Image (cartoon, helix red, strand yellow):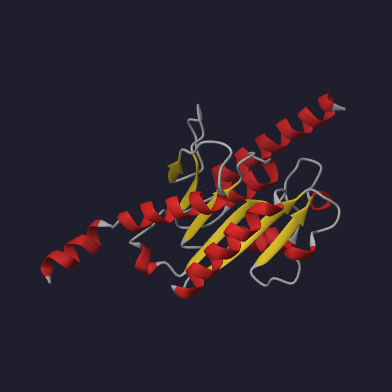
Length: 192
């Protein structure tokens, strides 16, 4: 069983690498005040993380930033707290193909949307979520530091200690994004 699973995963990784090689994406980020959309991929298996995500969504909504969350839930039925929330969609275990690639219209739409920022909350490095982050057209991708990886999919990587606290991690990301300004934004300020 594990041998078959490993072979399928290896084929899935190879297919993903080919898709990534064909994908064109331009990296852009000016400053946090210019951000209008944030996409988040999230391992939804730990329901206690949801309150941190909901708080983050609320903070961003107050700033006029639209947040869309795509979660991967491996269980059969979604917990009640996950249902009927407009900014939250899920892919489930039965919605991935034989090579562990997401196979839903929601995942395709999320990948194609040109978010200003993509935040990867895939702390267990689940392959279906990795596929979504890797193929995303987002202008800036933020994720966990991948030890030993030469070909990272992220533009900014954060090193965190495990177990990760969702709210603290999101606050950490926003803190660093608020510190980053592009050269054009700085030159504008200097002229004023």
